Length: 249
Image (tube, rainbow, N blue to C red; front, side, top):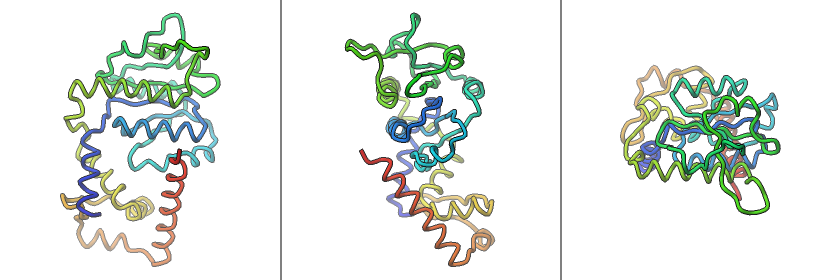
């Protein structure tokens, strides 16, 4: 990894907001998931949460390949997801039109916040609505009653970004150095990170110049046949091509 790329990744990590996230509840259309992840990356979200059914093939086709920058935690159901988020002292919001819904701009997003986004056609489930602390709504004066899920998310997230920026929350590093090191290695050395995962080898330290700091025993463990290395390189290339395809407008 070049020193320039190292600095670029470090700059990204310095603005990440681990206390802001979204939870996708059965949002399954690949183009929507891709757009949601891009919006999350744009406002500094480093980890999102999702509740999906067993359609693993569909999930693979979405931009989950952006995991180097926005990680996805999977949950078996919305109850498990909300319990996990509340353990982090997050306020739970759900995009849902009801008699007690509040304007999304009235929320204090400088607090730890998780936003539940429901399935494209039917919206959030009754369970999600019951578990949320507040229902939020985007005021609309046209004939339609709702926005596309990815558009609605972007609107809400940029209000959160605006509030947090005014509060100076992008001026403080919020990720642990351990987390930063993980992202640096996976983002700077994607092929080697695959080797580590396949062989269950701990990640090495990355120094301030973007170099791997490891002893001879680590490199020995990392040795692969030329055929194996080519296979990993091809897999990484295919992943990158899939990310590019999903991110095209």
